[in-house]
Image 1 (spheres, rainbow over the protein chains, first blue to last red):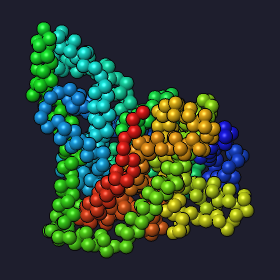
Image 2 (cartoon, rainbow over the protein chains, first blue to last red; image 1 turned 120 degrees about the vertical axis):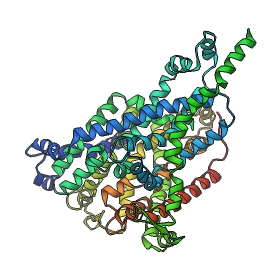
Image 3 (cartoon, rainbow over the protein chains, first blue to last red; image 1 turned 30 degrees about the vertical axis):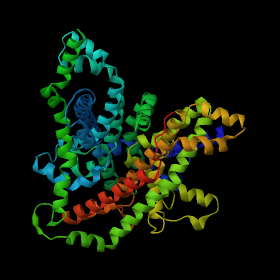
Length: 266
Length: 302
């Protein structure tokens, strides 16, 4: 069973190895010798791909979208979650069900009104035109997961701070925020993964070249190069995946924990 | 002293201005970009609209046009095929992988976890393009394997053949999340207390028997969560179709969301696009309702 599972594990990695292998081959060698090691190693696929594929810009855009979405969602989402778990207000339960509706509305369905709205609000062609919808759609799960986390925290800490004369804002930002760091870190990983790899909204709202994220920029490169030059396609795939793979190797454990946080909590 | 403390806490938590400051920004953002768009969506679905202006209300015409169009039904069928493959093939495979994962030695389990989750972490564009290479008719991985096995007649042009294109896309899409779903199942398995297995061990139940009798029934919370997640994910499938076939050959491999995209942005018919969106939301709500009604109605507490 162990051997079988090692083989299966390798089968998940094989396509990536294959693309790496292809990226060192000439255009014609890909057709004649798709799987063996390159007979003649060529390295200019990487240079050629980078000439046509504006990797630094797309990477920067992807990072801007992900980090922007994380900041807005986590900052405002955690405040709302705290407000749900601790403060007393009349329509709290109604607001809680309201925010839960975000879990069943797929972002794809409102793409048409979103496009019209970003146009009318003057957000078209700006990073904010994607960051705001991303944040709004990321809010529901962020708020609900942090809400569950806040409820598990004892109130004593705040009571102590309150007696020391802290205002609610001081209590929240000085006392609570540092305590919930692990939960916030989980949220950051989850939102980053979803935003960094998001395709549909980016494809439509981020269609202009200067604001394209990697997912869409890479597709555009594939379309422009056609299906003939697999060496360059492989090179572009490796370049695009390298940052993700590095992050995944370094933060493997934390990423796995974050990814499974939702399933345990529900 | 105690009363004083309670009063101060109440003042802290009942402060109207503070509640407003904490709750308002998130609720506003959510309302503007998630809830509000549904209203113009419904409105536009009754209009003749080319994306720039309303050219008059046309009643139910958009809905009738959408429902009369064969491509819409084809797109629904394709989406349905992907949902079925996910529910009855991909999820059970993930579950089996998770059950086996639970029996592995630690280093092998870690290797398997890391490698099987990797596709889900990588960009959809990379994965979909990789599968184009796998399905490539001349030198692709799949046909090379088939030819090596002497099955030349089975070596098809997978993405250009109307019979194989939809399952081929579904396999690429479902493969990407196979390991992640297995990891989620595995997390659920880990949460089951070991004492549940001790009785079974005494009875001499093996791996398969204890899995069927104990693990799988106790996993129903996770199963339900994954079922909802994967069904909604399959319903909204767009990226792999766009990258691998652009809905082709012709319009044969469109999903519902791809059809929406095509009507709205390639055919510049926002009216029909919004009508498709509304019909799609109804489908998703019905599915979510059905899952909640028929799968795992009671919550399990250990």
